[in-house]
Image (cartoon, rainbow, N blue to C red; front, side, top):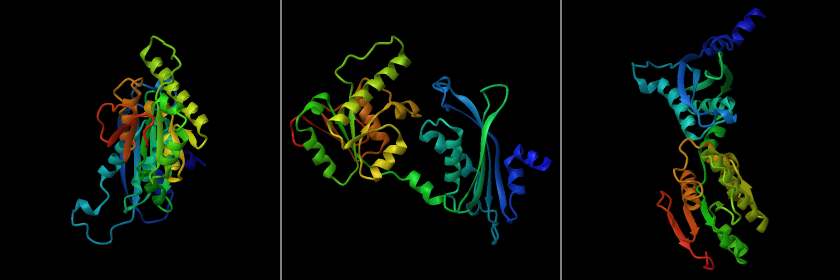
Length: 304
């Protein structure tokens, strides 16, 4: 029992050594500290805090001579790179989510057999708050690869005039007939949005106002499902569901969020289309600022 308690609080390398009889080699990255915005609580938003990573990767011994060749081994850079890539992908609420994604990315390396990941928050008090996970390569690589591969949708911005047009359902028929996934975006509703007098809270109110309009569109055509998270969007695109983007979570969780005011909803849609690596952005009305995704505009009443 004493030994079990010791191992519960031991470094991942000690736990790795005690948990298997397999003749694995181990590489480790210890006490790797980065500053990042992370956390599910409102007080953690808009603030960076120190997070410490300890990672141990078990690899099968290389039978042939290594010849002092870095290309023949699993480099430490692959571990720190996995951490950086997941931190840069999107804002994450839970350490558990981050740990699982880092582990899955490391296990995509052909040499990696098993990985121990410990992540700790260092600035939430006079202590460290953390999580530790263990993942093995068996059965995880397809899931990790699926997480990394995303279809390229067509993103369509519908103005309030377009939403109210009697031909809306016919437009959606035409748009959904194409083989590419379809994501619909809307702007602010015509109802006046409350003014808070505070930049951060106003941003939240404006995003919620866009989402109210998304639900209005969903009520107009029940094939359209309001979707708020990247995970839901990825699933919906792979399963042929028509989505209406509810922007709050993705915008607020973005590492590199939209530079324009969210009230500039066409520019916000351009940012979203770029984030989704959309095949095309179709805007009903005038084109906004340039984006990386090919764009075209149509007038309400035109054939899409």
